[in-house]
Length: 434
Image (cartoon, rainbow, N blue to C red; front, side, top):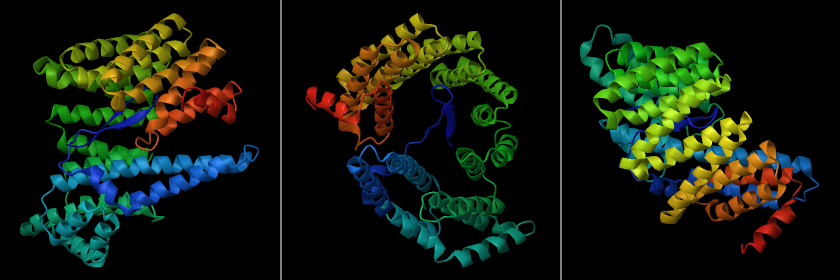
């Protein structure tokens, strides 16, 4: 099943994974030379930044930008490897090239996996071109086309990790299109649309989503709602809000009907779509509609959490954070403060049982509240204390959970807005026993 994009927080698009692969992605990353090289580059840049005097502003800014790019690249690399693991596990490994590529991939040898195809690239392309020409009249070649399509599909997914190739984006598109020319499948059409959307090629992505809707989702309401959700996210990013609202609305109608038949399966999808609509209405300043949608989503997540707290309590906290951010941005300060307080209390309780899983959520909520006391209801000491507490929590996670580095940057930003220097930040952390 493909991936679905959901709006996580106000105006932010995140990728929601709906697969579990039997391949151990952590082991693959641990063996990958490319991944280790990215980590080494990041560590080098951090060391340069740490030793660079604060008065060298331009150099620090350039290095900071490089660090941010490397962090984003590392996170994308992990997502790409996860997707490769899922797809190698899903497809039928029925050619020698696919078998050899999978063997290299499972050893973390991603460049070698690409090389399996590259060493026979001309042969693959010739096969692809010949089979495409003969497709209309020779039915027995259809199975070969299927195999060839899957090879180019996997090659497209592998190319997404080829950061040393300056033409990786264009090459990935070429491999997707060769795969689709050989045989249009639910997987390659949807994933190409998703790839284009993720890389902000919205105009190119839109017709592929439409093709998916017409060819693969016309008789499947679950798939239709999923594609409509992504198409709505696309139109929202293009500021085509009327189209986005209509698509979210149709997706919500479908999911409500599915949930009537099977609530345990589809109510989470209803909550996701309500959240997306709330983001859109909040951006349009249609606050009554946004609040109603956030509150319905929150009610659904509370009910789901009663039955499965480990799966849905985090979503309760996220929705409370979203509501609080909306209320804070619109000067409904008492409501914002109460929602932030409830979210923080919830995450603290979760962190007592599972610190490694939920302490970053505690820290993120602390940062949100610190920003609230910086921008909406200025309170210097409370804002500074909250930001310092978040940094204290996050420091053990910065190497094992790279996304927490962005949280740390936000906390430091709050402190610097209050005029706190890096030396003073370090001193305050040390006084807390760090």
